[in-house]
Each structure stands twice: as structure tokens, then as C-alpha cells.
Image (cartoon, rainbow, N blue to C red; front, side, top):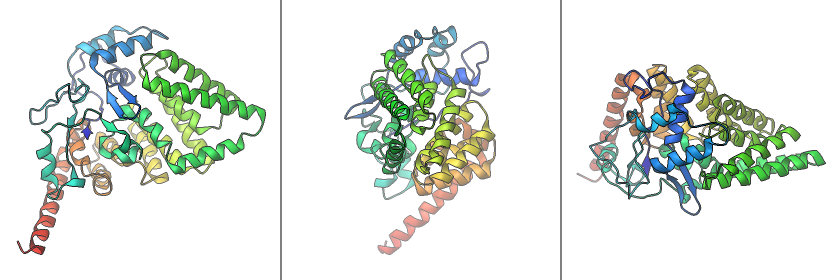
Length: 382
């Protein structure tokens, strides 16, 4: 399993290689360009190399705008989020690429397969494993299947599996039954056309025509019928894609509309997904209070289905330097979903502002693990 360093905004300690200060949207665009994921049929998700990512970006941007100097320098400048864990960098033959803006390391075993708790995670960091970042087997469970291994740059791919969850499928069946007249039927057909083209783009991001076709079909669909939340979900994905249509404001708007129309269908799982992604776009815009409010709505509508929503809330509160709230949501993610969220938080630059709170939390859970281990040993007469 591969654990990514989460995206965070640059700080004074993380200087941008660009002479002029970037806007949040430009910084995130550069991050998305550099961190490109592929959907590989039968395998799962892979991360492409720097050179491949550059070529994909250049091809995509020729549709609507040129790759400007800011983005070109972004490939060649200072490695803003570079980190080394125990001096171990993953060999490119084992992972598609380590990345310049985030470092991946492979954990061959985690808390689900260890007996000794937290210490085993640290010991396994230096080991390497699979080439695929997320297997199809784990992806079948959507975001909940990946847990701490989720990178927000891969959510457009992961959401394809998320939509296969029974609760979200039921919502689409309900929607289909509402589209009875000719106009709504045409809207549904254009939506399905757009879905096909978008899935083709995910598998072949070096073919931007697929993205253009998906964009056009989805807009034709909402022009005929605005109330399809799935259509707005895909448009949100398209607008946060590092390509010709990139616009995080529109992405946030369509993710919000996804949540709104999903609520109207009483589809709580889809509403939660819309709020979750809309919250992330608010974070990218540096609208932390809005991100928190949207994140809270996400876990209100689906407290179990999106572990990353709990972690992201901790991240947003940490960015606000609210240590108490950050630790509360981090602890929930750790205790109810995946203990590896502790490691993810330790690598996340947003948690550096609450380092003292985080260190105290780590001491607390370490002591708890030690106590549990001692109790187990006593039970065995050791």
C-alpha cells in the first residue's frame, strides 16, 4: 500500500520556485500537473512519470491555452514538498515515480496485519512493494477501501468506483425513473455519453479530445435537465483537472450542486461525496472556514463512507491552528478507519502548526498501544 504526502499550500518554509507569488489556483494546478494518476483496467491506479505528466499537460493545454512559463518552471524548480523518510526513496522500477511534490513510500504491512501496533509501521517504511498505487480489489470499496492511501489528486478516478456503491447506484436508478419525457431522456443519454468519454479520458489522458467530448456532453445534459447530481459530479472533476477547462471555482460550484440535487433525491452517500469534494476545492482556494463547514456536512450525511473526510477536517482545522479540533477528527480517522492516518498527519505540512498537540497525541496513542500489548502478554502468562 502506498501512502502519499497530502497536498498543502506553500509556506515561507516551502518557497515557490516561481519568482512571482502564485495564486492558490495556480499552485494547485501545478501540483495536479505533476501528480498525474492513470486508471488501468484490471490493475487499479498508477502514477505517471514526470516526463509523461509533462507531455500529458502540454497536449491537454493546447486545446484551450498554452502551457505558460509558470507551469514550465514548476517542473524544473525547487522541489517544494520533497521529504525523505529514513533516507529511503522508492526505486522507479517499483513505483511509477516518486514525484517532486509528494513522496510515496510503500508499506508492506500495516495495522490490519500486525500485532505490535504503532512501532511496526515505522519499521515497514523502508520496505518496498507493489507497482500499482491502489489495486482494483481495494478500489472496489471506493474511498473507504483506500483509507489513508487516498490522494486527493486521484479522487476523480476513485469516484468511479465510489459510484458503484449500492446506495449511490440506487440513486441513479431513481433518477432514471424520473426522466420519463423526451427532453429528460435526451439529458440522460447525453449524460451517459459524457460518462463514457470521461472514463476514456481517465485511461488515456494524452487524448484530450475525450475530455472535450465529455465536457460538451455533460453541458448538453444539464441544459436539458439541470437536476442530475451525477452530471454535476463529473463536471466538478473536469474543472479540477489540470487541463484546458481548469477552474476550481466552477469545480466547487458543481460539486456543491451535486450535493444539493443528491439531497433532493435523498441520496445521502452522493450528497456526502459532493460536500467532501466541494470542501476540498474550498481548501484549495484557502477558504478554510468554508472548507470546514462543507466538510462537516459531508460527515453528517455519510459518517462511515468517506474516511478521508474525517482526515481532511483534521487537516483544515490544523491549517487554522485549532489543535484541539484537529486532533479530535484525526483521532476519529485513526480509531475508526485506519491507524496509518497518524503517519499521514506526521508528513502533512498543515499539521506543522500544531506540532505540540500532534506530538502529545502520538505519545498518548503510543502509551495506549503499549498498555494493550502488556495486557496481551499478561494474558499469555508472559
